[in-house]
Image 1 (cartoon, rainbow, N blue to C red):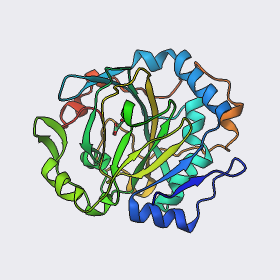
Image 2 (image 1 turned 30 degrees about the vertical axis):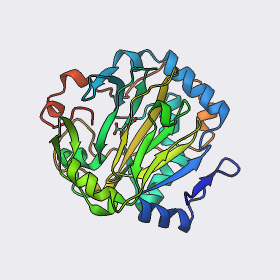
Image 3 (image 1 turned 90 degrees about the vertical axis):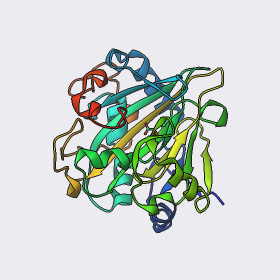
Image 4 (image 1 turned 180 degrees about the horizontal axis):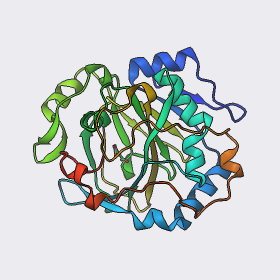
Length: 287
Ligand SMILES: O=C(O)CCC(=O)C(=O)O
């Protein structure tokens, strides 16, 4: 049975049950992490934040379908910056990972109606390992900004697959991602879950959790916000296109509602994905 959690009184208490579920399954789902008023602000920030659109990069899947990605290294002070730094998000990751975390990067993944491409099976740590992160003490939160369902390419995860450790990543069967034969074997042990979400719901997942997503065959956009965190103790040992330890200034949960900065993008450190040398040397360019 799927266990999901709800947020009470605008705060999220990370219980032992949640920590145990994260350790066992590699993920937890929190419904309504962000409420409607916060989502209105987030959507406005996405629409009005010009840099978000300037740094849009198209990622092609094996069939030539494309999804858009926008990536930045530092949270900044706009609405999404407050979201990435707020206690119910960053503080929850801190508790799930068991130590101080910093913002490793954030991104949007946008799948346009009918055209938005799939993402191959992979683990985030399959790539972050190559950035000099020695331990898998890292995680991502997938936050639905639009509704996310089977028809528009919701995330699919192999429950418990993080316990297999890091799987080889490279070019397998015509696409870049995790060793697909290994993934097929793991499917026999780890149940496949489609993570359908309403706007504001959040999937907190471990960096070794195998995940994929399908094309968007619906008539609506599928926009997701994915901040990622690394533990301070796991400061990367080499330079890469993502930051070494940089203290995260945590903000209270009401910071999103109180933020009226929709356009100021100072210090966010957007990635110019098309021109990044470290990304080109990697097997997949979207990490
Ligand atoms: O947004 C998606 O469908 C998947 C994104 C993802 O897994 C990634 O970029 O690592």
